[in-house]
Amino acid sequence: MAISRNGRLLILDEKGREKEYFPITYGSVLLVKEGSMSSPARSSPPGPYSFIILSEIGGTVAYKDIIEGENVREEIDKITGKAQKIVVETISQEKRVPQFVITSSKGEEKRYYLPEHSHLMVADGQEIHPGDILGEDSHPERQDQGHHRRPPPRPGALRGAQAPRSGRRG
Image (cartoon, rainbow, N blue to C red; front, side, top):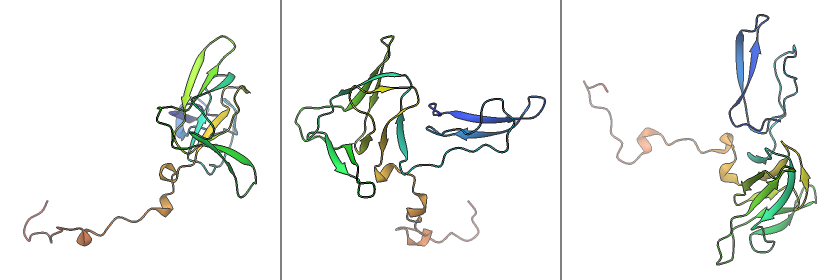
């Protein structure tokens, strides 16, 4: 699983020269092994979420500033029937920043801040490994839904649009 935001897959010829490269998106699962001979690379299909939070280290999950009923609510998924915890706008006067704190067996700590609308995919106290999915963000404004975007307005429809002047190029 790709945990780097700037990864790429290189296709090399028999002499080790780069023939092609493909950007690897964060969270992609490669179905080929490094150094193997293969047909064109494939990765896992994108899920319904546009933003996932992956763990860079293994260790134990600790919730910080995640308070059910205040900034997290439980919802039942209409399709699967499973309960999911989702980060919501806080109703408290106190400023809380929901986050996961992962502590490795060596004592290394890594924090992952959770934006509003994040689905919590791990439990407090759960043991995880590098590359595990901690959360998914399903906020519609952050999803890549290009086919649902409104087309740009026609130039003549813009207020103040003028016809080009004759004899002048620009």
